[in-house]
Length: 481
Image (cartoon, rainbow, N blue to C red):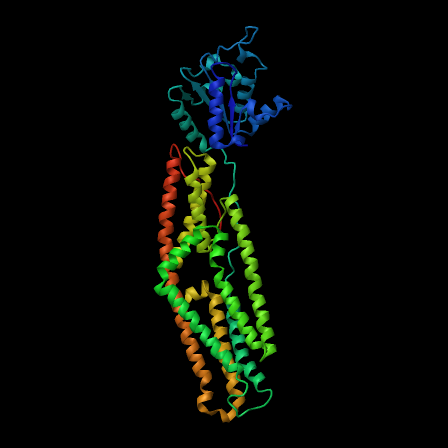
């Protein structure tokens, strides 16, 4: 147990005080951490075994000493402490022999027992520093006792290990794979287009050209959306995201689902248009949609489940790379929890809150450092997959343009053969501008989030300090990331 064992002798002077003490200590440390014979021993158990086990498991034994404690006698007139079978004496003997912390608790005007009046086996009790509790200053004295016990009474909870693993950062393999796939697209698609021979008709089967133009148009749409959200609308978008991320994951998904639905409808319309002209390409496009939508739906389901678990079980060790949305939601949860508490809070509540605050402060500091990353570091660490996707997207656009111009041979003219170069330049400009806007926006966003999170965590920390009576030190938990 590692808790507190309350040793007392039944009597009108001590029983009420003992029960009040047990109630206050149990409320602060938890029922499992405070042993009292009338409350901690199940009916039917052998009480000698339970008492010995309680003394053996405890860290601190409190000896309740009211006035007349030394002179208490049994019905035969013999002093109770002089009897070999006296359980008050036996519990003190066991605690002293096991080198437990033994605290004489003096009630009201009771005096520390002189060593010469104690049995030899418990004479050491007179040398232990006593703590006095009076009826007038009961609350203050018990709170002072709790402060002294906190460093030795073990907590009854442990942090929950995080089930989420930090996302693996892609290594050079992603770069090589992106480069090889881009080269393969630019070689294989024109080669496949010339399998039926050359043509001198520029307008023959312009499916590839239409797809290339659609790809550039979609890049432009993405750029416009990024410019609107990251430029003109960045403050309303930031406020909208903050409000949504403070809510539950379920409400967040309900408010943001139109975006993936729109993209899915757009891809479906594109698939229908392509199907009649190039069924093979349409099948590949449909497989790509399934591969993209399936993991996304599974991720949404997992996030809903995890969101409910985080409210029921806390605090959880947070990986250093925890997303901003999750951090905001954890801060909101902690804020709601602490607002519902009333002073004085239990030790478990306080320690859990301090642990959660420590985890959140470290993650917020990581986000603050990430806001100062340069462009290349941001692309490599924060957006490697997006960067790789844009490279492949650009390569696909150029490959589609080549698939339209290469079959024309020399009859296409210089202007038509310059189309792949023009597509590459336009696509690169659109992609670079989109990335630059996104980089500037995420830097501004992380700085704003860092300032906001630091302020909110400071308010929660001040509230926890206020709810803790009297103010106590933070829980120090050693952990490795």
